[in-house]
Length: 160
Picture 1 (cartoon, rainbow, N blue to C red):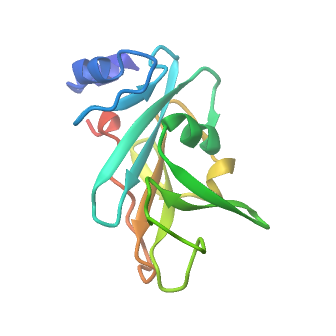
Picture 2 (cartoon, rainbow, N blue to C red):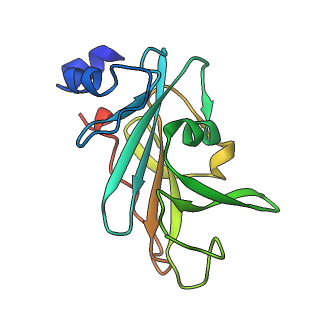
């Protein structure tokens, strides 16, 4: 995995940004948890404004579920329980306030999965998703009238 980053010119950036097991919060750095773990999954969040953040989460098993990735990423998020499971209402404090998760004619969080260098719409809820090494969970806050929302940007670690 590290040879992929080094060959893409991101090795030094990854090692500097993820050099410890504690999250790092610095401008233009990539925040990682447990960089020594054998596998890493990513979370990319793109706000309605176009601003985005990303985090990586280390894990030891063959996969990690979406809720664990979100919990360990350190990204703030809020959910509501519905009959089909949990839905995400707020990510990284957007929207600032809400009383409903999907109010009519208001933006919502579209969920995507990155695998093999390509984003696709998530087939189900975030908690049921299983990510493998170098895969990503993507959130994009989009207008309710958008019939085909675009995914967030690729994680910087995978963009090379």
